[in-house]
View 1 (cartoon, helix red, strand yellow):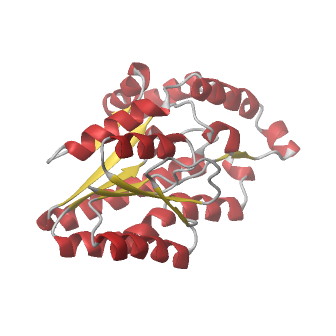
View 2 (cartoon, helix red, strand yellow):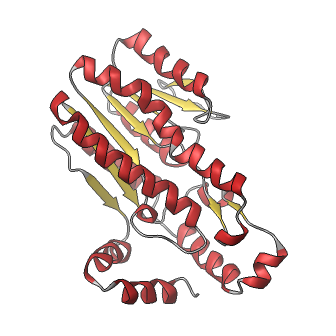
View 3 (cartoon, helix red, strand yellow):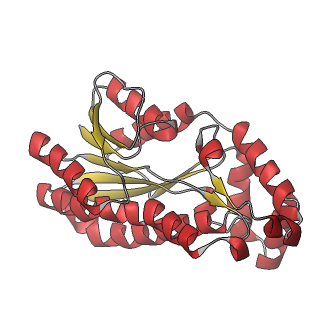
Length: 264
């Protein structure tokens, strides 16, 4: 299969590119600043926030291969901090990369898959796209947007043989933690005493989380399926339980559970 993955420099993207290439697929991957290159994988320099670069990346694959069998939207970033102290520019940047980055690629990928009569679109969301996480509100908002967009897209493409799958990872040990931009305004730390301890807890969970290879193996399995599920939660048992709890518990009680968990 011909597979295009966004953001393969590290973390999920790198692990998926390695695993899918090892299974014999023709893998193309976009990057902004890759320093290590996986043998057999074709690297395309493209920023998900640049319209022209995104179009050129997709056209390079289709011009070379004539098709895209699987598109995996993975490129993303995180901004943490109290929403009150998050700048408007932070909000724009978070949505521009995580949500609009996906939209830009799909603007060119969807017509190709519709005309070729099939394909798989796999978009990386997050458990944070199923519940609003404190001090990660901008990130959660961007992932909620992915969930809603993909839900609508799935319905629109059901008659064309195109499958739309959303992946909701929990905590994973990747460089996402180190590259997250966090609000550092002293006034934010003073106004929200729980901010610092909550972020410390979040980072501890991430650093002790699952390895990206776990997600990569699941993606390989999904690529092989003729009829994959609409979504997959890839997380620890406790985090999977938290998603179930949100559907079962009264909203106020679930909010209390999150408050305790995140040390608010």
